[in-house]
Image (cartoon, rainbow, N blue to C red):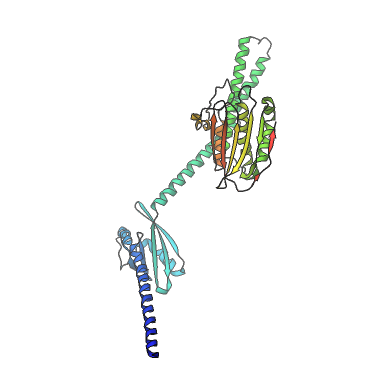
Length: 376
């Protein structure tokens, strides 16, 4: 009975071992077929740099040099192979073949006295990198052109306009120059020069959005809006406007540009108010699921037809005549460029004679300032 038990026990162990061997054999077979199944070239080279294995994809690559298994691997591999065999460290080798680019990773296997070479076709990646490099160079040229324009606009273009305005003022005060027509012409000349000066300054501001040297930092938007309200205090008083501020967050942003963003939006809301209706501007925010902040600037002004809601962010686009509302049509274009620079979005919703809402989405990572505020 004891011998039978031992026999059964041994037979059970034998069966388990056979199953285990079968499983391991299956795994080894799967591993051994991996190189041949790979769509990328795979080579094996002995210590004498003789090619002892190549999968089908590798053979297609070898045809470029008329290479084959059993002879020395093509010359472009030799130097890197020798370095890997000497120090045992993996190295990558990039090789260009007509219209294709391959990167080969060469790995030393000292215990087996050979090296494995794993190739990958990176042609498309190289094309993409080349395009990115071209775009980067084009962007650099564009930025240089903007910097050049900024230099010209800051002095060369404005100086003649200053002289026109100055000489116009002097002509007005020359005795005997009281002719109504002459005075009208002088006024028109000065107004045109002033508009041109404003346009140049707006273009300068627009061009400098992406070339602003000051780095972004952690700022509190509530403090920024308070500063804007102080700047616009006279206009708020003249229009009897009310600004209601709900919670606003702190963000990683460029403070000067955030100030300009809100100054443009609040300034527009005050400018485009309905006749006989005091402007009411509501500014609030909420945090979205993706941790971004949604900030809205809502007014009760004249509004606009939503068919124009995309065009209003284009440079020089005006929905109203210059005779009705002053301006160059650059304000919202500057706003969009500022928001774009901060990796955000700005959109608008509006109903004529009811008002507009500008929606800004900005990245953020800290809690909001929950203080409420109302400016009468």
